[in-house]
Structures are given as C-alpha cells and as structure tokens.
Image (cartoon, rainbow, N blue to C red):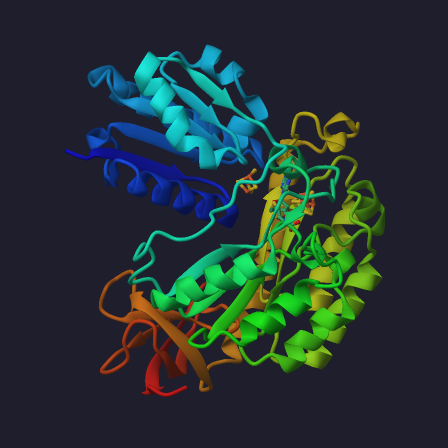
Amino acid sequence: MPRKFYITTMGCQMNEYDSDYLSQLLLQDRFEASRRPEDADLIMINTCTVRRKAEQKAYSLLGRMVSIKRKRPDTIIGLVGCIAQQEGAQLLERFPGLDFVLGTREIGRIGEVLDRVEGTGERIAATDLNKTSLPSGHLPGYFAGKVKGYLSIMEGCDNFCSYCIVPYVRGREVSRPPKEILSEAKSLVSQGVKEITLLGQNVNSYRPEEDDSFGFPSLLRELEEVDGLRRIRFTTSHPKDLSDDLIRCFRELRKLCPHIHLPVQSGSNRVLKLMNRGYTREKYAELIQRLRDARPDIAVTSDIIVGFPGESDEDFHLTLDLIRKIQFDSIYSFKYSDRKGTPAASLGHKVSEEIKAKRLSTLQALQKSITLSKNKLLEGKEVEVLVEGPSKRGRQLTGRTDTNKVVNFNHHTGSLGELVKVKIKRSFANSLRGEISSTRA
Ligand code: SAH
Ligand code: SF4
Ligand code: F3S
C-alpha cells in the first residue's frame, strides 16, 4: 500500500512552488497525498521566517505535528524551507520529534533523505545553499484542473535589504535557463493552465549564465508566444532595477497583465537609505508615472514596512504622503520585525510595538479608503475575468481581473479557465461583484 504524505505551506509563493515540487517528487516515489496530517506517514512543514510571527506560527504547528507523532510513533516529521535553512541541525536538538531538516536548496534530495531516515533511523539536516534546487520537469497531470500556475525563474536574492532575512535563507541569485522555463510553461499550459505567474525575489535581475544579454524582458517576449497561454504575471520586481525595456513590455505584450507589484517599503528617503533599497521616493514616483504612461490601466500594488528602526513621525508621514500621491490599488503592510543576523537588527532607536501598531492601523485605514475609491470607479464598467471556480460561498463564480482584483459573479454560462466579460455592479475593499455579460473576452 502506498504511504501517505501531508505537507503544509507557510510563507510566500516561492514556498508554494517548492511544496509542489516536493509533492511531485514524493508522488513519483512511493507516496500518495493525504488531506489530514493524522492519516499521514510523513508530515512536512514548509516554513517562512521573514517576520517573527511567521516563525512562531511554524513552531506552534510543529508542536501540533509532534503530538500527532506521539500517537503514531512511526510518523516521520520534516521541517522544510526558510526556517530549516536558517536554523539547520540545531532544530534536531531542540525538537526530539523532528526527523529531518531540509533547506531551501535541498528539496531535490527528499528521496535520499527519507531512505536514510527510514533505513537507519538517522536524523538528518541537509542545508547546503550552494546548489540549485528546481524541478527538471512536471509529473504528468499534476496541475490538471488548475487555471493558474507559478513558475520559478530564479532562486535567491543578492540585494541584502538591511531588514531582510531572505538572502541568508535563499542564497545567491541564480537564474534558470530560458529553455527550461519555456518548457515548464508549455507543460503547465498543456495541463490546462491559462495564467502563469513568474517567480523570483527580484525578477528584474534575471540573467541566465549562458547568455547575459538575455534579460527578463526577453523572457517575457518568448513567453508571449506560447500558444494557449492567456495571461502572464510576475512577482517581485525591485524598483532599483526596473528597466525601460520592461516598461516597454507593458505597452507591447498583450498577455502581460496590467498589474505590477512594486514594493516601495517606505516613503522617507532617509529610511530608504537605511534599508539599503537603492532608490528615492522621487525615483519611485517617476517609475510609476512611466508605467502609467506606458499602460494607463495598470494596477500598482506595494509592500510597506512601518516602524523600521529610527523611523520618526516625520518619516512615517512621508510614507503616508507617498501613498496619497501614488494611489496604490492595494498594499501589504507589515510591522518591522527584527531578524537575527540582518544589519537592521543591530540598529538602535527601535520603535515600540505600540507605535508600530498605531502606524500600521493609520496606514491601513488610509489605504482602505484609496482602494475603495479606486474600486468604486469600476462600478458599471466591464472587466475581463479569468474564471477560477466557485466563489467562497459557493453560489457564484470567482476569478480575477487582469489587474488582479477578485470578482465574484453570477453564472449562467462561463466555466473554469474561460476568459469572460463581467459587468461590475458593486465594489468592496477586497472584491468586486458583477454579472457576466459575455463569455468571449
Ligand atoms: N523579494 C520581495 C519580497 C520579499 S519579502 C521584494 O523584495 O519585494 C516580502 C515583504 O516582506 C517585503 O517586501 C517586506 O515588505 C516584508 N519584510 C521583509 N523583511 C521584513 C522584516 N524584517 N520586517 C517586516 N517586514 C519585512
Ligand atoms: Fe528581501 Fe530585499 Fe531581496 Fe526582497 S529584494 S528578498 S526585500 S533582500
Ligand atoms: Fe518567507 Fe522564505 Fe518566502 S522567509 S517570504 S518563505 S522566501
């Protein structure tokens, strides 16, 4: 009888991509997927350590999994991903129930690691960062029934923003060869995927080793030619490397969705400098203007950190001011969190939790009103939606506009994977509601 595995994924899209890779390796080997950890012979947690909260969540989940193991002592438990990379073998000491630790670039070794754990009862920590760990192909049918897919085009990050742990847990930047990316894109499309999101910590610095004149825009142009692929997205791009050529792609490429996630992090030049971001608020605003000139309907979203060490009221007000000026479609905002080993962790003048919380809620209230007023402008308009499936409440269908806004709509026609026209009737802060007006977009 095949053994069962359960994997739970925390953190960013990279981790989701990695979990899919792990799952495919296990399915090819001797396992089948289990929906519940209680039924699994192998339990894995793919972890994130970008902020302290994410780290704590992973440890409490690990505690839960270890208690399952107490009832079923043969269960194998593995901690995978960014915490695994950061903490390594120490985790085995700290958590006696843990059988293996698999770092971010060791995923391809899962089979071998399991053989050893099962064969000899050895406990293993595999955390070499000096390799690459990306799939060389897909398990046939794995993505069947999916409309959207992720495709990792590079690993690692070389930017070392002063607050960020990612370069330490994901290693140096390595770009995948374009040929591999194209073949993975075609494989996704052949399984029914219509929309691909290209992943990298900084996609603008995509540069394959064999041809360093082939940058990210060249990759987009090749993907535009893939038959059956309807939409291309990417995340994340760094403002300091956003090129004229990429801006041109937004003007020229039909499949490239009019949405860019361009994290600004702060509106204060002083803080941006301390963050080692490599641009100013003026430069950022100019980039947005150029993107909007190239593609007037482009949606812009961003990440912002409040309470970076030394952030004054004035710095924070500059962030609010930039938010008002740019008019983002939406923002992910976070309270600054000290990460061990990053330069910002050793800066003085830490902002209190109380002030961070206050700033976060002020920022979120401002952004909510901007998001709502932007969404209101869509009422009465027709938008193009890629149908993803039934809505949360089940009575409607749900999908996203090309600008990445969620739309729930009544359906008489229109099915999974179709591009349909929907007339927006009402708008909210997190979604739009509409009615289908045509099944042909
Ligand atoms: N590579 C991507 C995002 C990586 S992490 C990029 O550069 O945009 C996602 C977001 O988490 C970051 O954009 C940042 O806003 C936030 N973040 C990273 N480190 C953080 C920290 N120490 N405290 C709070 N937020 C953090
Ligand atoms: Fe972190 Fe900066 Fe790299 Fe993004 S670009 S992953 S914020 S170091
Ligand atoms: Fe978290 Fe690792 Fe992604 S730290 S945000 S899962 S790269």
